[in-house]
Image (cartoon, rainbow over all chains, first blue to last red; front, side):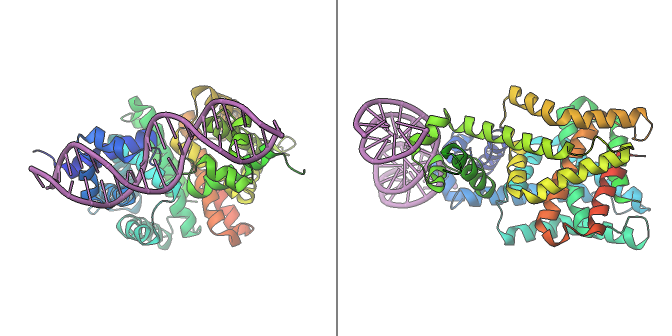
Length: 189
Length: 189
DNA sequence: GTCTATATATAGATAGAC
DNA sequence: GTCTATCTATATATAGAC
């Protein structure tokens, strides 16, 4: 067996959640798509909510790992930000279902406080570090840090949507440059 | 009777949709909250989807009317954009449930193609005009227009969320200036 | 771990009286 | 227009065999 039944369930859930919406997707449709039995789903997950949470944590972990990739050796802060930005964008373009699912979680405010904290530590601490360093260096504007973080996420989502909807542009350097410039200029004076 | 039963249903639906999610809200919970009978809801709306659509169109119309308010007499393009931006932000801060509902519709892609077009004409044509005029005047950057429009919406949503979550800052001029600067600098070179 | 069969609640929607 | 009563399908979840 190449992938476990549990993984098949997670994969099918992601596909259906992103296509039809989390709350509009029944557990029975998930097991049907995964080709497993009802009992199998509820053996691996105590309930639907636990399935959603586990899927989300794994997706966010995946994004975090891709985003920080190769950003360590980069010299300037701007180059580091650009590397981070392009890594995240590549991830979104290559994983449109995962991006859609993340947006739903963000919009629907489904996560418990504890799980939101966990994701924050996994992913956003890197972003906060980058903003604070940039502010200390005088490179980034001295706007409220929470506003900057929120807008970074917002721009990441909207830009990703643009490239997913216009997939022919995802490797067009002019469009990629425009996207990064909008992001970067929003953060600088 | 101050408000009609139909309006009570729409009001209760908005409150429940924004709090629990559109798909997680049952029609029975709506009629219960509105204090009306099941049959009354299905007399005014053929089904749940029609209720969602009608609510969304009215909410977007509301936003569009608030946003363009007093922007006509403003001289420069930047001042016009700032007026538009602040009108929209004020609307969001004063109508957090409506904003939340709009975000859900946007994320969940619930609308039919026809209804999306209707909203586009109502609201986004104004934004597209502004961007194109700014590009012709050399004030705005020559980025792909769809990317710019998508990012404008994204920044509007994320900035609104920031002020709704930190409501004490919603009248703080420094924070409001920071928010507009991020928006404006994203669009200019 | 995986399955089938089933329990129980609730979903969206309709019929028809008033 | 508004109500009560009700229909049918489907939701999440469990029990227990293999």
